[in-house]
Structure formats: C-alpha cells, structure tokens
Length: 364
Image (cartoon, rainbow, N blue to C red):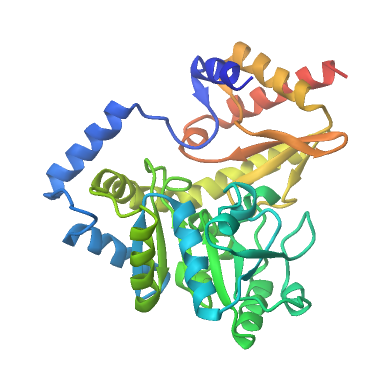
C-alpha cells in the first residue's frame, strides 16, 4: 500500500500538503548559490562563525541565551530530558500520551536514557495545569507540544499555558517546549515568539516541518544547558564532521517561510469557511488555530484511501498524506497548509474536495 501510494502521488501534478518537493540536485544547487552569494565557508565538526551566528539569531528571536543546531530533532529532545533527569535526580517526565517521544521514537527515552513518562490529561485534548497539580510522582520535567500534531493541531489556550508555566515554576519542574511547529502558532496567539516561549526553560524547534529545510533542528536554553547539550550531542553521535548543508538549508528557508505564516493561517481560515458549509464533514480543531488541522468524514479508512486515489486520477491532485482512524465510524485526513495550497485558486481546491466527498458518498 505504501509503495502504491508513492507511485500514485508521484504522478500527480498538484500536491496539497506543504511545500514543493524539490529534487536533490535543485536543493544542492540552491545551497551552492546561497553560499556563494553570502561568502559562506564549510564547517568542521559544526564549528564556525556562520553557524554561531544562526544559532544566536534563533536564540534572540525566542528569548534565550544560547542555541545549538542539530541535524535530528529526536536527538535534541532526548538530550534535553537526559540533562534534566541528571539535574533533578528523577527519571519522571510529564507529557500527553501523543507526545512525539512516546509515539514515534521506539521508546528511546526509556531504553537509552532510563526516563519514565507520566501521562497528563485526557486522551483527546491537551492537558491542563490541574493535571500537573494532581500528579503524585515527582516530575523532573514537563513537555508541552505547541501545536499538538496528533490532537489535530490543537493549541493550549494562552491563559491556560500561562497557568502551566506558573505551576511548573512553583513546583520547580523544568518546563520544556516541543516547538516542532512553533513557527505556526504566532498568528493565532497574536504574541511574539519571545512571549510564547517565556516561562519555558528549554525549547526545541524544527527547520524542516514548518520551514521546509532538508532537515535540522535547534535546542535552546541558558548557556549552561546548551554547553551540557554539546557534550551529549557528541556522546550520541550528533557531532558530525560537516553540518553545513543542513544548516544552510535551514537558514536560507527560514526568513522566507516565517514571513508566510500569516498567509498560511489566512488560507486555513478560508478552508474552514468552505468545510463548515459541508454537512458531511467536521473539523479538528473546531476553529482554526494553526495551518495544521484534521478533516473528519464518516467512512472507513479503505474507502477514504480509495477516494483519494480516485481524485488523484481524475484531477492529478494528491489531497493529503495522512489518513487515520478517528473513532469507530469516522476517519480523518490531516491537512497542512503551505506554499502549495497558497498557489492554487480557491475554486479549484474546493471543487476537488467536493468531488472527493461525492466519491465517498457513492460508497455508502
């Protein structure tokens, strides 16, 4: 099924999700041109003025003393929790059950670092400050994901987020932000990134999920925390002989995509207006919070996948990558608004989805 989907998707003229998938040749050509234009030299083991400058730029934007570039966000977050564990002398960390470390990392937190999760909140909603207060275990850290991808892109209300920050500060719990999609939160919160991050002791951000780079991430905190992170990065094999391609890909896409976040959000609100006029679908979240959301339809996964294939053949459009089960009778399509949808006319996009719904209805 996976290979079949790849084959069908590769033949489509339009991909709704995210950004154009450039060839490797094109990506390296753009990196080469950027380096030539900005007189950038290669690094050796991640050392060099240019890398330091980019780390300082992101740290300043988010209100932290220091930052450290990683090729892997998975490594960055595990290192953050390992440092906190050693400082607090407790293996317990609080997180929602959909936390990336718990779902997508093969229990590396446990197998490599001896960490133990404490589940916070209800299964289908973000946790609250009261969930932390009601925890009996001594937590060394709490992870907040903004937005929560596996909850459909939900954000914690800013007042509630402030309460979480206050509780963690009072209880001396290290509050860590999984900000893989932090860049997408500003239009909804109407706060600058410093204000969003204020109260977190450490933050991880991604440069490929929202920014569209080849890969790359950054861990941010105070100078002591980042110096300890450098040691652990080396221990875990993350101190590469050369990180320039990943770093430059992140840097050259960063400002461009950050400026487009309000446009992605505006497009998302337009799509919400369209979907809300359709009786046969529901949306998560119910109101637009970021450019990541879920479309719910009453159908089996197989029917939804077959409808996606039918639309691909008819319109040469791949409407989404992720299809999953929401409950017994309902499936979801994960939507992510980026450059691709911005470039397409609303009438075209809406007609494609109307046809998709018609195909599903005919299967009932």
